Length: 108
Image (cartoon, rainbow, N blue to C red; front, top):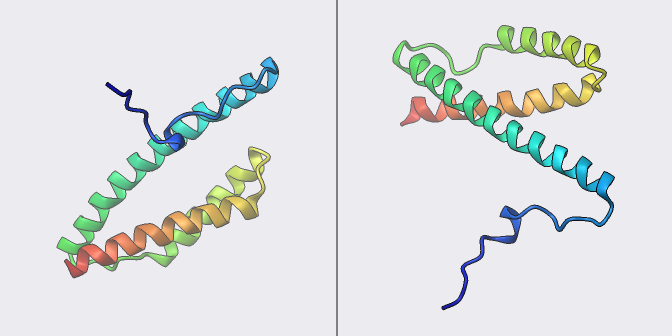
C-alpha cells in the first residue's frame, strides 16, 4: 500500500541545517498561517455585510468609508514602521475583492 502525501505546497519548505534561519522560517510560517485565518474571518464578515447590503438595497461600495479606512491604516502602518504605500496597495486589493463579492451577491 502506498503512502498518500499532501501536495508539496501544503508542506513547509525543507528545513535548513542553519538553526537561526530555521527559527526565522518557522516564525514566518506561523505568521503566514495567522494572516490566512484573519483574512478568512474578515471575508466571512464582509460576506455578511454584502448580503445585508443586498437585502437593504445599499450600494456594494462606500467610497467614503474606503478612503477613511485607507487613511487610518496608512497611519497605523507608519506607527508600525511598515511602508504605508505597501499597506495601501494591500488594503485596496482586499477592498476591491470585497466589492466584487458584494456586486456578485446583488446579481445572484
